[in-house]
Each structure stands twice: as C-alpha cells, then as structure tokens.
Length: 76
Image (cartoon, rainbow, N blue to C red; front, side, top):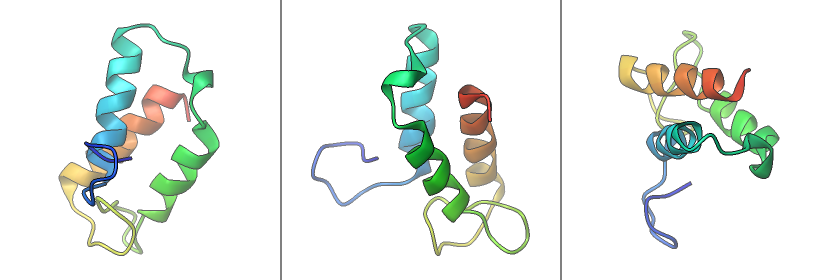
C-alpha cells in the first residue's frame, strides 16, 4: 500500500492509516484483501520478533506498533 497511487513509497504506515480510517468509518473490513495484508505484515517480521516498515528492513518500536495495531484492527 502506498500514499499515492503509483508512487514508490510504500510501507506499513499506510496500511495502519487505511485500517484506522476504515475503523473510524465503521467500514466492512471484508471489502479488503485481509489475507494479503496479514501476509505482507508477517513478511515484515524480523528474527527478534519485531517488525520493520517493509520486508527486509530492520525492526524498531514504531514499525512494531503499526503492525500490532493493524493486526488488532483486523482482529488477528
């Protein structure tokens, strides 16, 4: 997911933002491809249990918060 269609900038910040908006609007999460979102976030998990903003990036607290909060929005 990216901030602007076709831009090269994409990471879990935008997933968290989109899920937060969906939640505020009481939108149906079933309209999203939840399996792909979960798969992407799990690919961001590192050997230490934390999460990076994207796959192959180092884990840190903010990215871990975004991933855990995203899983919470999705009920996973």
